Length: 444
Image (cartoon, rainbow, N blue to C red; front, side, top):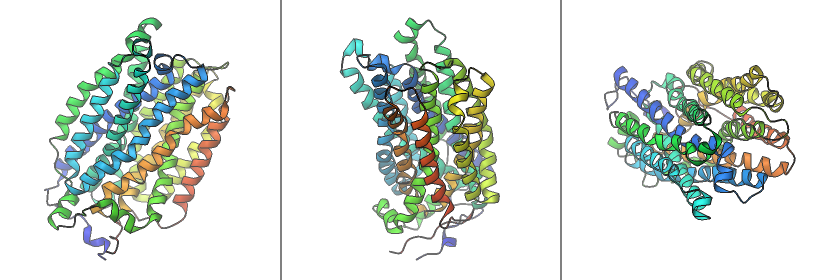
């Protein structure tokens, strides 16, 4: 077994890492990540607001929401598959090429959603195609997330890995912000225009962003840690097998930690968004979207702060703080979001997403990277982060099904609390690598 110190990155990597290269990698990872999340969360916003009547019009209102949320979940179900496939080749042939490919896949699928016929135009073929494209999106994003954080984290000094990986993580709130903004803009159209062609515009616009993202990513250098593994001939024929040889404990702990992260997003940005926009005490949809926008921007600003704190204080306290904030805010979130008070609506998303989720997301990428050696890291992220995210994707669907015809947020809040508790236990107990420490390779 080789010691952890044997895979530390020197001050000057084989790829020639310096400040200019690091900045270029951070910029490329952040821009690409923002574009991918913009594409992915366009559907989330659309699922809560318009896709039900467009693609599932013969359902009752509750069944229509269930159907659109099920399609939302389909994208997440495909994420582990994408993570495993792209993780395998990312560990075998390199991170950079996989990042370009995943961006192209995601962008193409998103653009095609914008040209889909609706149920009225194509019947049952319309929702079938929608689900298919959502699955393709999930495959693309499943490969994107691991590659993006690895490129940033593996170019970083080990004692700054939390800070560096927080930048591609900020692509999530930036993408969420962008997708929410464009839907807010098109929602200003008269309802008949919005439902006939306006909803398509955000999806069609994504193709322009993809061109920019691919151009930027083609300019970056390969990960220096992957280059070292490649030069040393330490690549695994089947990287996933190396993950399993390392043991199930880090995989399960990483998956539960990720479950708390992802369930927070599913409940706050999808389930509660839908809850607050419907029912007898519904809030004004624009007010809720405005709150989500402010929360997303707050998170984008605070993510590097959380990443830096995780480098200085350790991953564990930062993660536990984030889980606790998200749980406590959920006690008042349903009331605040339907209160009609814009200040309370904004405060909900600022606290839950801008502070709580930022703390979790700012620390978790570096935590997962440090738990696995570089020759199978990409694959390891597929069976930790993506597994947790996939389970969380069913949160809105399960919560709506449990509520039935009753307009209540209680099932969703209980579900969130259960997942946050499981995540906190996974982080609180057991050994966590110190910032800058890399797990040793498993024995052969």
